Length: 301
Length: 314
Image 1 (cartoon, helix red, strand yellow):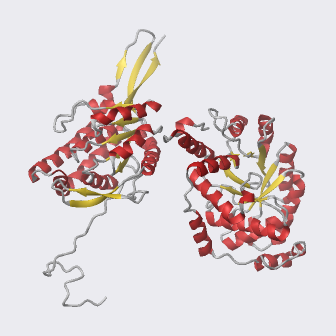
Image 2: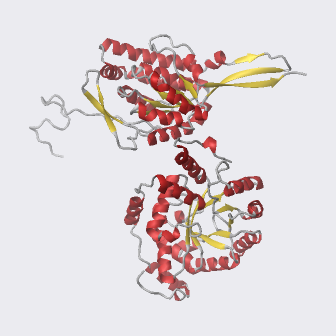
Image 3: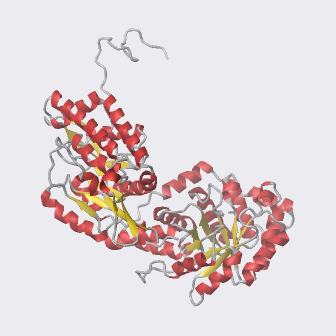
């Protein structure tokens, strides 16, 4: 291709002309792929100061359905992996996040406002939280499970097992640390997830899925939808193939309706007590989506 | 089909048959794919969707063709065929169950008193690689055990080698061995390579007296695809034009979602005509499709998405 020597085109950096901005397309993350919403819709996302950042995909109930199918399909592999392997895979996510710290700090600052220092601190805390939960993967069973010398010729083993497909409404305020704090523990214990990103601040979540896609987390283990919480959450709550729902990002006034819908197939419903993301998370979120299986082992005659 | 041909004359010998089949209009593959794609864009909702789902259920040949099939599995399949959703009596029964010949007796016994037919694959299914004598014996076994429908496979090797008359005569002989049972002729379009061949094989099967033409065994990929279905539906439509007879089409293999099934019903209506929206002339060979249809039906009835925990899986 002949180039015109007078024009500063074709990738000549610093030719004195401003580069055209490359606008990023923020898409959904379903089954390990990045589709646009089936509905073809998108919605504007603004920064904390009110300027337009980008248009994010506006998921529909069909996307919710597809996400649940993907999560269900991925459940066997993820829950069947050894706890040690899950820990390694989650730790690798933290490694990759660490390499993209600046990008996430910039996105968090754009989404939430505040200082660059505060944004960087939030990203660092989010990475540390991945590491924290990754470390718990092969140690949680020792703490939550147990052995029980029952009265009789048996010995009991109680083992935590994943609940299944967990729908998570991510916190609306903390776009990265909050998201990581609700997502990682569900993954640690072997669940697969369908996550509704924070409605007004979805961009850090979408970038997180790009990290997940390039990590070793199998496709379908995390499915992220961006869109309107009020539109999508009821479909997740009433979906009979979802085993649990985390209502962290739902305003308290709207939780009751979702809990009623969730009762149809006796979902586990998790409503957090406190939501200060900067404090030590403890084990409460690991305990939220596990089922205890007790095995009665006969002992000698 | 504008030229009027004497259909008895074209099967005089291999050369005449070859002239006739190769004289059929060629299929424009791009056009066929485009047309099939265009028909898949119709939006079928609410009452139309409910009707389509129930119609599709009534057209299912509920199939199990595994080496590991047992009489118990066939019995449970028959129970599901008669009453697909135990919690809902308004769900129609399926058209037939489809099993291997040695399990026909079990199926007939389990289905007695119902209107569900028993189809059996025969003729050294799925490859068809056996002597004609063996294949016919296979058919007679299944018919004697009480099969009301026989799904045969054509000899794809002979067809691809141009021995059309041999294929024709095998179908005729199989039809004779069927007695009163209906004959479905499996073309295994995935092995025929081109849509032209699909059209020729369809006509060949119709000329030889097949009551149904069927896409695939389900053991070879690609199985039923929209362009192939289009060509086969055109064949039965055109065949009615030249002979006045109504023959059926059965799609089999790889159809797992209600959405696909409904799209095929749209195609049946648009290509062949609404005479074919009837289990006597159109079937889906399927196993997991039925569950998806039931889940969709439930979604329409309750408004909430359903999950596989609420249907029977074997």
